[in-house]
Image 1 (cartoon, rainbow, N blue to C red):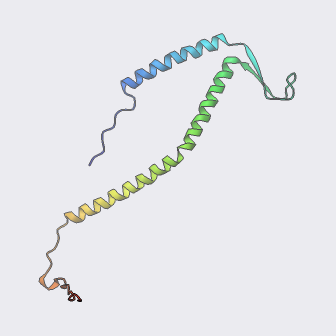
Image 2: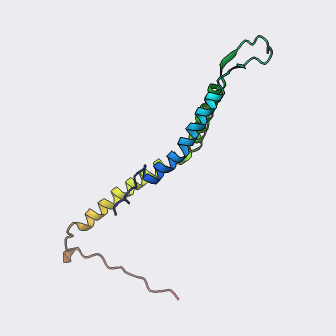
Image 3: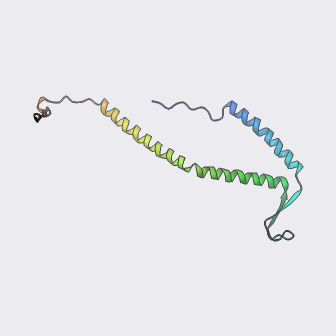
Length: 134
């Protein structure tokens, strides 16, 4: 049994859908970045709002894009951690399939090998049954 043929990962429909989603998204991000160039100060000091000990000043669009990138990375890591049990199960099942395929190949080769005809002197012993008790 041969494995099913795989479809190409980047088919034309998939590429078209990606372009239909990514091009408008890129336009929105560029328009947002041009419209929000003013600097914003982000304070990490909850006790002093006038003279914060830790602050960061950057354009608003950079802050939003930075937060989006951090969110995507954190979400990706959380998803990767949640799917660990499925990756382990997949590896275990792949090892089991390989083992069973090897065993099947051994049985096929054993069945294909010519079998010798048993000699009359090597006939198995007959089974002796006791009479039933009444």
